[in-house]
Image 1: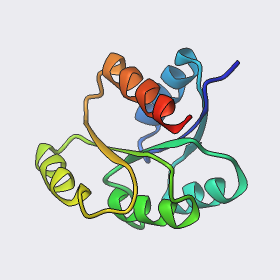
Image 2 (image 1 turned 120 degrees about the vertical axis):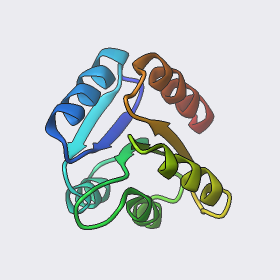
Image 3 (image 1 turned 45 degrees about the vertical axis):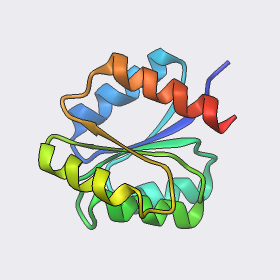
Length: 126
């Protein structure tokens, strides 16, 4: 039995594939999108329990996409990922003012830590 549906929004194919494979291995059902437009369409069509969103995306940044995801599903946790450390500090600073659940994860992603965060978020959601 799968633990939950996780949306991965990442424009870099190899990073997206790595995350999708890891999620599947961890027992989750992953959905993938390479653009914010694809991600929003998926969230409107499918039940998504959590999303992993790259900060640097075409069309809009990951923080803006998180806000759009929360308009559709106000309780969806968002893990925002980026390889830029300074982005993480800005996100942590802003997160207290956001309406949804947000966690920053720095690239390169430690998959053991990712699994820990995923399992924790799913426990809180259930």
